[in-house]
Length: 219
Image (tube, rainbow, N blue to C red; front, top):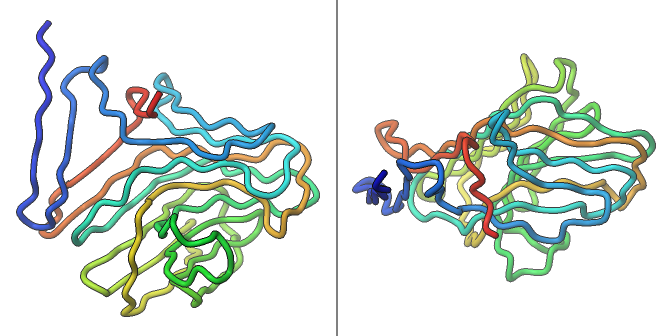
């Protein structure tokens, strides 16, 4: 059967979307970096989910990212099955940031939203907030950027952590990260399942999406 690759360019944001009509012509939009021992990041096409899982690890566990898309957008990631091992503090977050700036507290241009064992959090630059997670392990990460108006938000049931402000950022990457806070040691299994990733532009036009029906990780 002939493979068809369709290219859309949004007049609203300048984002170019590549979407494939064939499972074996899957668009490779994700890259994996820094996968630590004991951490596995993969796409399960049977269950249609991005899986990030670690066993007995500490510090930075790994990251899956794509190059940053320009223009105005709202990026939404649905997640489920967040689990935190014993001992330290596992975190998983969705973030956009400038990868050319050292990954330290001095990076004031990052935007992020995430979850730990019993809390959810969000931040823009040096401004961040966190709140208790009383509603479980299934929810939504959201980062919205229209001009310099930014929103970072984590929602689980009735619990919400968010930061909104007018702030200029210069991101290069957009992705997900798993690790432990303060390089604490976590024993047992930690992880999360991302079930859908969608980028929406002006007038609710879908600009980019991955429902993880094929292996969209770069080889």
